[in-house]
Amino acid sequence: MNEHLIEVQDLTKVYGTGAAAVHALDGVDMIVDEGEFVAIMGASGSGKSTLMNILGCLDRPTEGQYWLGGEDVSKLNKAQLAGIRNRQIGFVFQSYNLLPRSTAMKNVMLPLLYSRHDRRSGSEREKLAREALDAVGLAGRTDHRPNEMSGGEQQRVAIARALVNEPLLILADEPTGNLDTSASQEIVDILRGLHERGRTILMITHEPELGAQAERIVTLRDGRVVDGEEG
Image (cartoon, rainbow, N blue to C red; front, side):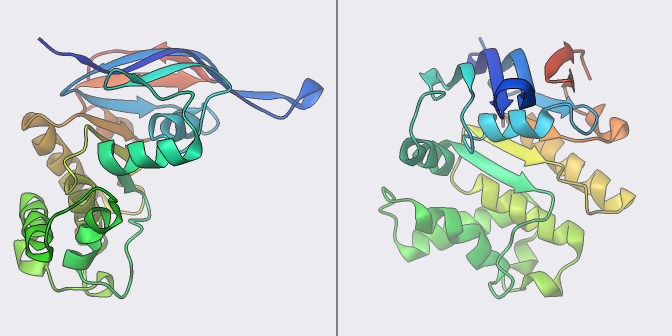
């Protein structure tokens, strides 16, 4: 039976005070089970990026609770949130966020190097990075730098980097935003394949044809969830 990997109750995020206060999130309730592939959609200003930042432990809510893997992370301090991000969440961003002078292998190994509790040897880390690159179809590109790869290949490196720590959750924030139609579909196909192998994936996208390929769509409008239909 699936466990609730994410449970959010009455999540609120307010920027500013008094008459200038803006409710970026206004009482969001959401559950994501382990192994789901969920697309979060909404127009610009709907609150989806704010929600992603909180789910990714990059920010804290003003009010409400957020449980990740059974742990209430909504009240943790910055250092504790950083630990959760490093151990339990893999990020994929629109702009790839790769180190330009480092090879694909070294970019993928970064999360392993940042982990304070990692006691693996250099050869063990390299093996994990190779396996992650192989999982996204880049076994032959380990020594290439970002400027030697296409946008789609760079995003695949970013997905491999998100996988390497075996996170509970993969958060993909507009992962196809800088790609053409063909490369965008390749990235979504990779995410779908990871989902089929049991990964839990949350993907923010403004493209309906890509969002529809997720298992489920959650739509935000004015900081509230207005839809949670099957994809």
